[in-house]
Length: 303
Image (cartoon, rainbow, N blue to C red; front, side):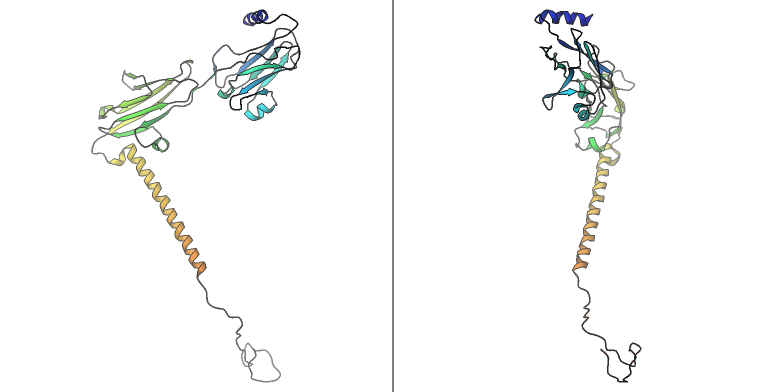
């Protein structure tokens, strides 16, 4: 029914004549990353669709590329697709659509019977949500990369600020909650001022996609509040400093060892060995075991 209404509207708006027009239709439901998607290019006449193809616009190169199962576009973007044709219809199927495949797309005809040889562009919004990342704010930036946030150990009286972030097709809605508690924080940041021992527990961050209810991610961390007399290296920050310091010492020792080895090799190469003068020969006497048999009987040394 929707296709008939679109064709009727297109017929009224376009000039009358023996001309064919193209229209591109996509899915009417929210498309998630990995879904099976079909795009239909329709003609208002039962025309031959051999000269009709689909193009995709590249936002990076700012140009249209022809989409074919064995064309340049597939070799460049590495995804499977299939194109089927029948009178008045062309179908492009993408078995597993990804976020970078959302388009825009258009139908283009090389036939002169299509004065409006291109359909209106169609964009297929692809919704997605990646895994949640949790990091502590207000400390050195390298803690995000060297200390995965699973168990956060802090000292009594410290200020704790934890940030929850996720990559998604639209900005998600964040909430923080503590297990066995009935309060919620409607923010991506959890702030605890001058923590006490009672603040220890499990905290869960939830990210909800605003357009697709099925897209939701959660991440739980444990916060442990240490007593004032706890050693400094028991905290998460102290352990991180201890590990990075140990790694730095190991690297420094390795550099010193290599430098000493290279210096010794250079010193040994420059030192001179004993003089070996091959021009001076040791005399050999006839009575010695090193002499050769002689028939003259002289006792002069043989040089």
